[in-house]
Length: 136
Image (cartoon, rainbow, N blue to C red; front, side, top):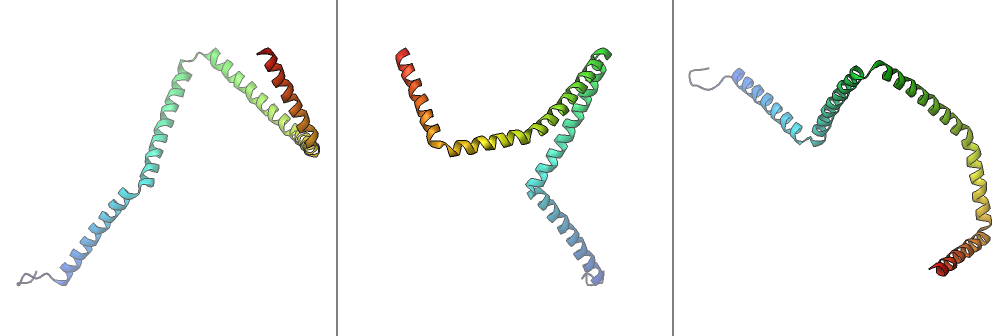
């Protein structure tokens, strides 16, 4: 410093730079506090990782405590179920076009014959009501 106690240009620059850095840190901290979505996402990520770790530990414990024959049976059953699911999926894919076509034909026929279908439905409804009245 000089003798009249006024700061030099370099000292002023250092103070300004320090103030800028402190202001930057303050703004970053305030921004982080107001970023609710980011904080929630971070918290959810930590909770998910914690749950995944707990599930892994539990799975390992179950594997350790389960007797070998039971594990073998479970693996075989899971394999059979997987094969049955694949087979069911293939059947569904194979049958889907025919079922869709049949449903389309039925819908077109129902639209073409609305009046007779409505009449038949009304007749059935009247018969059901009459039968209930006789019983009750």
